[in-house]
Amino acid sequence: QVQLVESGGGLVQAGGSLGLSCAASGRTFSSYNMAWFRQAPGKEREFVAVVRWRDGLTYYADSVKGRFTISRDNAKNTVYLQMNSLKPEDTAVYYCAAGSFLLLYTGGYYSRPSQYVYWGQGTQVTVSS
Image 1 (tube, rainbow, N blue to C red):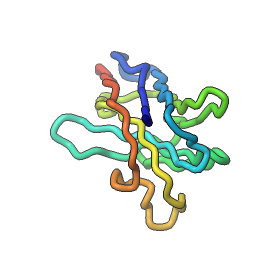
Image 2: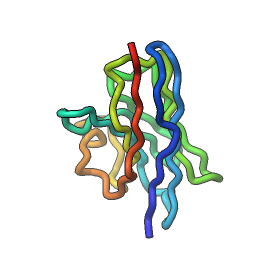
Image 3: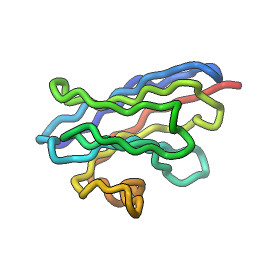
């Protein structure tokens, strides 16, 4: 049974930092792309960042570029999202996701939730002003 379990959410002041983790289990993810999405109340689920497990290739949403860093630890089967310079508009439930599609920049398919077949339960991140 595939499981993605997020942890590390919480409350932080604007300008602060927070790190999220996503522990993956139940299958081999070496051919998968691992992503973080987020969803604020009343809004659609939004792409944040993706990393290709095989070689660490990454893409980011423009809204987080330069502030967030996605990474993976092959030995621990864990994906991370380091969030710095947090803003109140970063407040959302953050989800980890996995998909086995071909990761290309062209077309931006990596930003579509429909490309991902496995999802975690989400972790709340709240940034106070």
